Length: 391
Image (cartoon, rainbow, N blue to C red; front, side, top):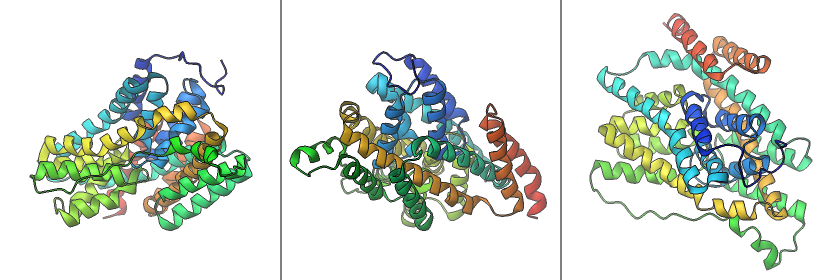
């Protein structure tokens, strides 16, 4: 069976194979959302042929249109493709659980030993290496998803520029890109029948009731649910929102603790947004960590599985295919732009620049080289060099 052809209703893999894959990805997948969605495409579409190109593009498009973490939502949708609700649920848990357990352990060490001073040294090396990893992933996604299509390139380059200039992802631009692609490709007459074809892409809205002071645990659950339900963009896009609530509004953490929490998310595998588990632990221990993670990931799960049947049912219609193509080009443009944004934050001297370049070159030259090896090597280099260079 061709790896680019649509996969039949009888998948060539078992549910447990898929769950184990995402368990490994959640355990060893470094690089944040840009790299993680790249790994999914490389492994599930190109290498194994378990997921078709069209199903992957639908999942990526839905993840960009809905609020919440990009990598987790893409994973949940890919679990839904052949194994529906059970697959989406198990894949989501397998993907998030490893990094959640890791941040719990780091949270315990942080509280027990009064901070993690070594974290700065590790992140010095890892942050630069991660840039090389995400650059390679973004290049592969761009080559595969944009190709030589002029309209896709126009959308792609526009989103690259907007992401770099604004330092964020603007949700309505993804929708606009989909509509533009639909109009150009399908040339609709804007009758009710044509407009109705896009109706399945509309997402349910969640309204959160005004909160009352029901104790710290309730406040944690409500605040992080709001973060998961209303913050668009991948990875670090949620950080400014978290800072405003955790440090400024509720004053649960101070500035240093918050920065350390973000660093923990960057040096652990899996979705970057798992920083919420570390923050929750610092606020209220294990219960706080569990409620923060539940509040953040439950909305993204619902925003994926509720529209998923419509994407599966109507996803092959020409209007929907054109719409998804536009959103995908915009998503990949935003991902490529985020590489530049990450570079601005990670490259602070000649050493980090060299680490980023060497990491990218190694991954480019040695196709079988595993990313965790790069990350581990960069961490060791960071621990060795940072004290010498920043005395």
